[in-house]
Amino acid sequence: MAMIGSGNDHLPVGAPGASVPRGGFSRRRLLALAAAAAAALGVVLFLCGYARFAAGIEAREPAATPRTDAIVVVTGGSQRVGDAIGLLGAERGARLLISGVNEKTSREELARLNPASRDLLACCVDLDYRARNTIGNAIETRRWALRHGFRSLLVVTSNYHMPRTLAEFGHAMPGVRFVAHPVVTDRLDPSGWWRRWATIKVLMPEYAKYLVARLRSLVESDPENSHLSVIIGGRKPVSPKPAEVLGPEAERRSHLRGGPSRDG
Image (cartoon, rainbow, N blue to C red; front, side, top):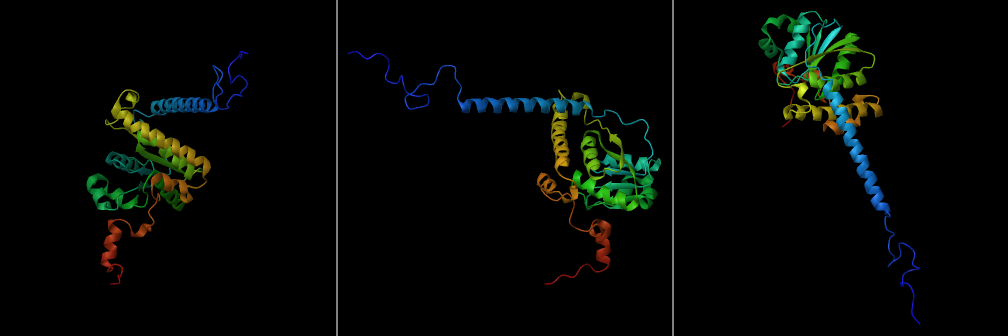
């Protein structure tokens, strides 16, 4: 007697020798498609956010600057410090903090670079040697503002760095009013955020860091006790050394006193 039909007609789908119905999708393939769709959506959202971020970068310095209690400048470019000292001389604030100063840079060296502001540097400028990054700038600025009772600060930094700086400062000091004074240089053309590689390679990483700063502020209450800031920066945002032992002046005072004793 002849057999009608194939030998595996009654095998369940998925059993050895069974065939998968045409047009069907395996669970693994569905998960792969979902992951690809999520990744594509993430890329689109990132690029849209980048476009908005880059378009918001100031291309010109403000024509007029309101007066605030004090001024803080985040180091990273010589023009930043020069502009901040100029704003102090224009009485846009009663005192200036230069945050993130290199440990080898002295007040005298700053005076040589800004000879017309020597008196201001002597009387009304504080140097912060402890901050190691933007998070550290925010932490040290908060300590300085609390010590002097400042409630409003004029923030001086590069135009592309301003969004992240304000995000970090706002997170560290929610009760302080900030006024932005972006420093604009010829080295960066914000209008070329989508076509100039020299601009993209600066703004794209900065946007990523800005996103990280905003997301970090959602999950932590105080940057000074943040484990994430250490992971992100690769080290603590503020030097563990006391402020009074940092900088050329402190080192000079230590030598005059004979320096710390050492065994062996």
